[in-house]
Amino acid sequence: MDIKLGKNDKRYIEGSDDVFSIMQRVLLRENKIDKEKEHFWIIGMNEAGYILYIELIALGSVKAVNIEPMNVYRVAVMKNATRVIAIHNHPSGRLVPSKADLDITDRLIQVGRILNIALVDHLIISTEAYESFRSMGIMDDLEKSLTYVPTYQVVEQIRKEEKKIARDSMKATKDMLKAERAQKEALIHALLEKNVSIEAIAKIMQITPKAVEKTIREK
Image (cartoon, rainbow, N blue to C red):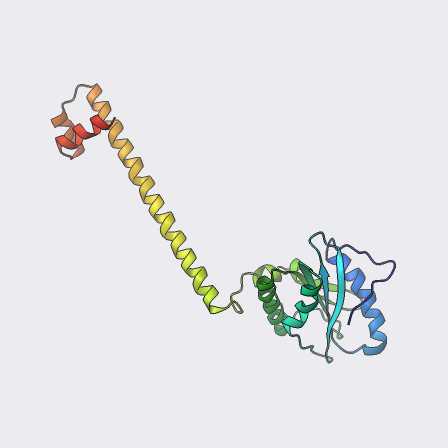
């Protein structure tokens, strides 16, 4: 169900306070009918934070509301939203996220990545106050979660990391060998300047006289 903004509501979202300011009034209106039920809304925005829509996705019971991720993103896709914010209320007034709240947020983050739509935040609200998952650090943790990442993507990510480690290791080895070679060359030429013989340099460096001569020619 599409929620209409009031004439005094902001059209831009700059932070979680703006979200609560709008959704508190929405909740107070809807509480007249479904006061003891959990509501789940989505605010869809463009890149600039301009509100494209506010949608009531689901109406649940006193303790829970069931959410299907594709229902959350259906309108976002239709209205070209690139960023969304999830909001739901706790009729009890207790704003502590449940395991189910964390789980659905995790799923929404992953589906949003597939659709290239960012889940910016998730707010739990009452008529008096709110909690922001972003402010609590929960979003940062869930964005690192692999729980709902498809297995093939996890494997691909691991392979990419392995290749990167191998490349970095190879580069580090090459850089180390290059540095050692430069040091040896510098020492050979320093000894030559002191009129040390090639044979003596070879003994000092523990290499063959031919290797010393090759270093001199390459210089």
